[in-house]
Amino acid sequence: MVDNKSQIEHSISQVRKRDGSVSDFNRDKILNAIYKAFSASNKPDKELAIKLADGVLIKLTEHGFSANNPPSVESIQDLVESTLIDQGHSDIAKSYILYRHERRKVREEKMKVLNTKKLDSVGKSFDINCLRVMASRYLFRDNKNEITEKPTELFERVAILVSISDLIRDNYLFTKDGGISQNIEEAAEYLKKLDDFNYKFKIGSYHLNKWHFRCLINCYLDLAKQGMMKVSFKELLTMLASKKFDAYADRISEYYGLMTSQDFLPNSPTMMNAGGRLGQLSACFVLGMPDDMQSIMKTTSDAALIFKSGGGVGINYSDLRDEGEIVASTSGVASGPVSFMNIINTVTEVVKQGGKRRGANMGIMEVWHPDIEKFITNKTEPGVLENFNVSVGVWKDFWDILVNSEDGKYTLRSPKDNSSAGEINAHHLIDLIAQSAWKSAEPGLIF
Image (cartoon, rainbow, N blue to C red; front, side, top):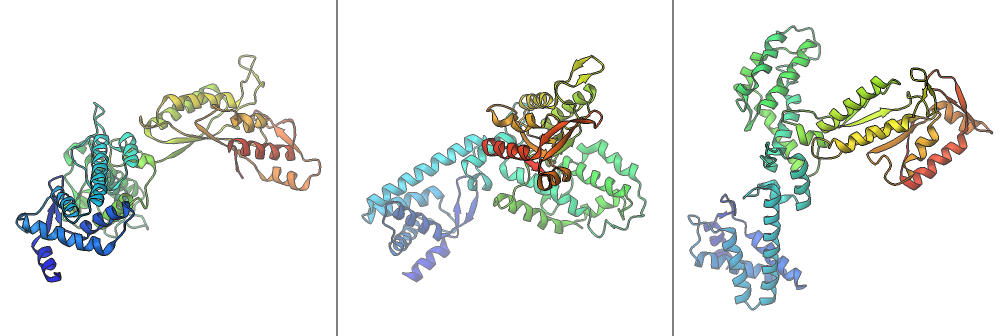
């Protein structure tokens, strides 16, 4: 029987998959499917599963399948069903049929989510919830909002772009010592003709699209301006075309594998933009907010553009004068930092991040600001600043008073001229921070 089984396995070397591709035949997959059916019926029996798997192999040859006529996945599963029934295991066959039905439903749902008729390797291995997030946020779409790339293509474009920074620092190209002059203008000219280089070059089997090529140019220009490029950009392209850097395909494959195994995933802007027109990979930008209306609105505009590109922002609001402070130009009173945080919060809500998700903010106020109590307690009410995480900047002078002073008196200062704006009890303030954090998980502390 063992010899017969071995001969059968040797004669059937491949299996035709649902997408039409062919892969190596693996008897263990039949065995595992049968064993799972037994386990689902609370009758786990490994020895019986092995015997039935051998029976399926025999039926495959009886039905004319061979090395020249590989069976399909569906054919194998049909024979598993018939073998279970023929051997008197109709209850197990029922479990197996239900298992096939559920798997079919999952496949169909995945294909619907990805807008495809065939699942690639990532589509098969990732669960449906992962694919929903991928489709809604990360996969490229056309001007009709139709998905235009497969999950494997997403991870390939990311892996290629990330690996370019390694390639450009290859010993043939790069020296950290500097002092080498290259024709920067000649290299920059390539930026004007990106379409001519779309998929023209490759690293191993990985083709560079025009946005990868743009990244290569920009990396070169950045290092060439520092005198760190040993060769001209034209020489670099000659070396690339002659497969001088094909070893970096292993780096690309390694990074690709880390992502597709879900051992590591980069931040959302990288998933959204790497290898694409925008090319914005940063998740967080620090913006200033000086205390004048023009600067405040400029920061608001900058934040909106960052949200659109897929990034988030961090702003220290401590320079804004406190609520009720006189505004000399209008003889009115200032509305305070928290009111301007509400403006940024509204902009965040309106401008979906990268057109795919809502943005995020980090808001900071330093502990000496006269509006610090309002800042600390503002998020204890539901629905307030929902697009913000907030933190209090707590510096050494505050800690010294908190630890060493019995009365705990801490001087608040005006952002306008640094003059005294009253006192607050440091012990009361730290208690207020703790109570608010317990109630709403905000604020954090920066010190």
